[in-house]
Image: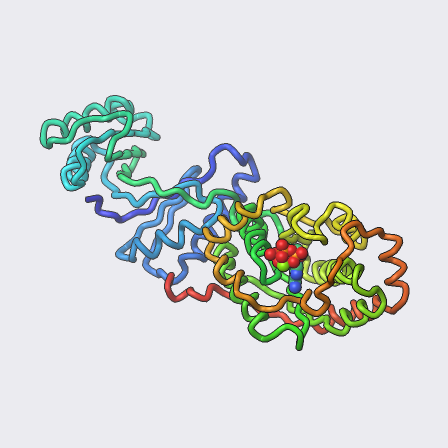
Length: 395
Ligand code: ATP
Ligand code: MG
């Protein structure tokens, strides 16, 4: 087998250029070190298109699990590092092949050091020749059971038989910070994941309506935040806003059909203020067009107009079944479907308006002094920073 001693990390080659690329690599390097901070023996080396991590005896399985969650990595491999010398390369490849238990193989060489005496094809042939001579394995260039990759650099050569897909996207936090409205539902945690993958640092705001919503409902949201924080550098700040009083006033002023419209307009106003205080340049939601009454285009327009900050909606055109698949993939689905009340419980409108107008919404709002209540909500929020609940499983 490969004597794993080095992890080789590849990152997107085409998507970023120039200064952006430098920032990309620096941030990725930082994020990887943070993710692996509990493995003190690791040592790092960064080059133009790779990051190398020497394991120095640390557990590859745990490192594999964590690295697969670092966005910005296109793929990575556990490798064996040998001197850039044909004999040493052949010997190690022969060992990998004969201990693999596989029947067919292919050698794929990438020669970064153009001064190496053989070109890539020459190396492929030489190594394959040794394996054919000494084992029963056959070459299959189309569907080999075993692929041995050789990367030749001037000082060392890296050998690997497995290329593990990375999370892709951009390094967490490189593209600025957004404030996500996080409910306990299925969609918004998935939205968090999508935003994080694009390199956005995600902070969350959650609206709770005690005593109509319970401690369990609040805990569920924090648990979800903890789960997705794995993709956000192992932490996520959550602002909890209790807005029961405001909701009760809304209901008095607007009655059943407009209650949800007004509630969401207030949520946007509160979120925008928190975002400004926290240095977030945009809000984000898990909305998907047409999914429920408050997500018709008319509703979205009527709700959005009360703020001036951009609102990112990564799931706007994603089908529910696909959102559920993603929720399963990132592990939030089972928690999201736990049946706790959400802040709409307080109204549970029988016939919410599906085509609200801003004229009517503003009219109902003019019936009470919502601005000072919005201020109060912003001021009295609680802030909690959460981390992955299962951190100890990883670390
Ligand atoms: P989700 O599954 O994310 O709750 P949903 O399909 O149930 O979405 P809504 O409940 O209408 O749809 O919510 C739409 C979006 O509004 C959510 O994705 C979330 O971004 C935000 N939102 C809803 N309720 C809350 C809440 N209590 N706190 C913070 N944000 C919320
Ligand atoms: Mg919801």
